Length: 619
Image (tube, rainbow, N blue to C red):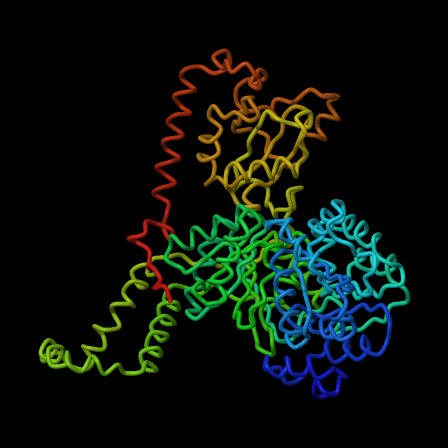
């Protein structure tokens, strides 16, 4: 089938398709639309993000419902507000010639009363997020007892976000004889279980292979030290002057922090995450679609509503917790027949995740190097030269030419070109001429991996700490690691060798973070109680625990497990620490804090003050 006319769509829908400029159906549309038009059946469709899934279920639903009835006949569930609004707008565009059609979006962050009023006017189709839909059902603001068609869009993502119970509850209010159409980019077990529970002998169509990434996207990874992750991001941006990208972070906090740093460094960037109000999110997305923002930093959840066809790069600043999520990320680029690049910035301990993702997407990653400073200078110079070469002449400048020519009367052509391009080139040259090589060699094989998931070669390059919290305070190694990296504002791989005991624990950082760690935990309170951190003589090699068993030590700590100095009374909640810390040690700590601050300031190389940075022009 080569045209939409071949699919069996009616003239109203075909007219809307012509207006929208669609010429040929995508693979998922060509497979799904004829089945859904001809049969009353359940359907499972697996296709990558950006392949036109909305039209694949939208056109059949619009053609099959009764426009003249005010009864709700179609329900579309989607994981996020952005995607909900996007689907609603597309459905309205598809049905622009269907007189009397009312498609209503139901989502959190907007007036539930206004949404209920819209539904009451007669909504043949409701597009909803699970949380708000469940709330409206509970309040009896919506009736879905007579729907004929239900769609679970981005089903894998809805389950990843914990909506399984909400979906189950919502579908329990729908008729058993309805048709359910499930669309997903991946097919994990949870999605398969949903299909078995709510669908009857569904027809399954697959575009490409299950979980496989589109061939329009190439996959690259860059190996750096965790502490150099942000500098690597900036270099990748500078090496691609025309970049139009989505940058993925794991947490809302990291998303906001990276975006703020990029803006401070002169990049046209913005953040998109769940802590923003709906109005803020709408403004960010409008700026991104208009390309006023070149680099959109987003969480996985917030990015589900991004539907922009000309994204050139997806940059994984941090890999997702679940390898399957990578498929959704890379699907943001390489859309509508265009090519794209998915980049991953990883530390040595994360290389194994790359292998897991390769198996899931059935594609290989290419290891590439972060470009050095002179390569970036050359790229920026040639980019400027091409822009100047392609610039149309504004003849309003003609009246100033005589004065300009007089100014450069004694300047040769070569000298003039050098002067002109030096304005831009010098900024990058001064910034990058003394910067270090960020690339590292993958030597993780054969190294000992700690419970914190980090490659560790014995502790000679790290600092080992004692901290007076443990299992009795509600920590396991993962919770303690997350707590430490959050309060210290360190990367995920900067805290490692975490070993949690009953009433105390140990952890490691690289030695360069030692002053920062000790300074931060000077007189630090958490939940009203003092938390004490000291340098420990325990090396975290795993031998002390075995030796305690041989020595019959039981729960008693050996001397090499102790921090320097006796800290047995260090976790008192009364706030009186004079009994466990002398004035001399307090002074030492103050000196360390001051030293840490000075060292941190002096160590800022690539992320120095704004006057030292090559501020990017806002394009």
